[in-house]
Image (cartoon, rainbow, N blue to C red):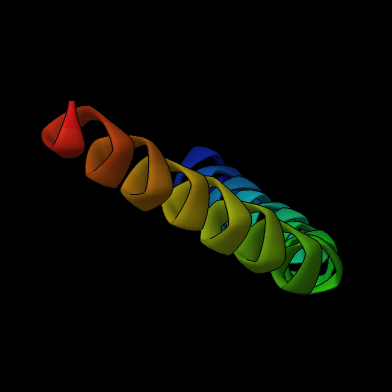
Length: 57
């Protein structure tokens, strides 16, 4: 029986560890999101401008 209990405790500890990791990842992602969105928007604008220029030629 003790083996079964140890496995259960280990998997619970793993779950907590994973959710902590996810929490940290989300925090980092939230910090980066604004800058990344702005950069992506700039890249998209640039791509549209480039496409317009190529169509006119």
